[in-house]
Amino acid sequence: MEKLRVGLIGAGGIATDVHIPAYEKVREHVEIVAISDVVYEKAKGVAAEKGIPHAFESYVKMLEEVDLDAISVCVPNKFHRDATIAALQAGCHVLCEKPPAMSADEAQEMEDIARSKGKLLMYGFHYRFTQEVQAAQRFIDGGELGNIYSARVQAIRRRGIPGWGVFTNKELQGGGPLIDIGVHMLDTALYLMGYPEPDIVLGKTHQQLGTQKGVGLLGEWDYENFTVEDMAVGMITFKNGASLVLESAFAANVKEQDVMQVSLLGNKGGADIFPLHIYQEKHGSLVNVSPQYLPQTNAHHDEIHAFVADCLQGNINHRLAEQGTRIQKIVDGLYQSAETGKAVQL
Image 1 (cartoon, rainbow, N blue to C red):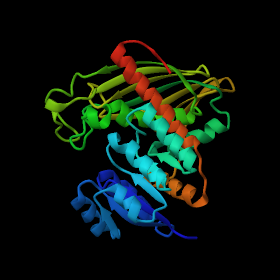
Image 2 (tube, one colour):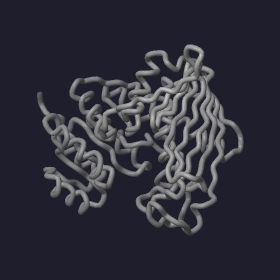
Image 3 (spheres, one colour):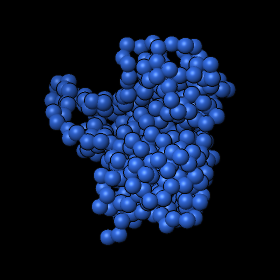
Image 4 (cartoon, rainbow, N blue to C red):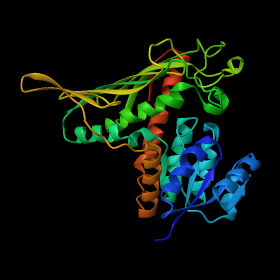
């Protein structure tokens, strides 16, 4: 079997710390052929360090000059759409980091082009690949939770405003914790719920702590140019009758330093996912079920290995791109609701 020829758009931390090491883990099936970055020296440095044959300043030039099968898009959110579409139109499968894009319209365009080109478009929602989520899915598939009618999503940091990158720049990022870490837990919940179609969203954002100097557990942030929310809350109702409550914050006065949690309620059982606990009523008793052992794996690596396998096997699952569009519509709706003060029908 020929190796998958991969290129990377963006040479920042997510490329060097996650994508490249994951591809290297399956080097018998993958060859990293090229990398591009608007800062050419960065691309050239990563290429030299990792033994990547070609480095470019322009991904357009990279796509024109190098024969590639698949692309990892590892650039700020604002540039996801253009990079992804260019790669798809060049005949490549695409793994784009989350969130899909800056808007639902962009995500829809990306999905439509992937479908028209017959290419796989997958997004970097790596929490799906954690052992807790995979085990929870087995319980759900086995009917242990029954009909999941409600969920709660939390992605909350006590003082976790990133002191690097563009995470506090709304123009480049599209928003704050909701679009950055909130989407991870939102995707996890929707994945386990079967990705129901959203109906109405109600959202509220807050900017209380990010615009003032404070303790930075993830480095010092530029509080004078902090243009995103530091907390977002919301409620989503779905056309199948289910509901979901969401809380996401870069900074909040809470006890725990970092909470990433999905809780599900079904008519036969409930679950907290991180770590996995199942709550049920059985044989006249209330019982809690917890796995005593789950394999220790790297969810980032498992995600990228799944992408590689799908590309090599020709498993073009357009449902993955469709799910990206769906979650982007929810995020758009929550931000729109926060701006208008009204619920938004999707």
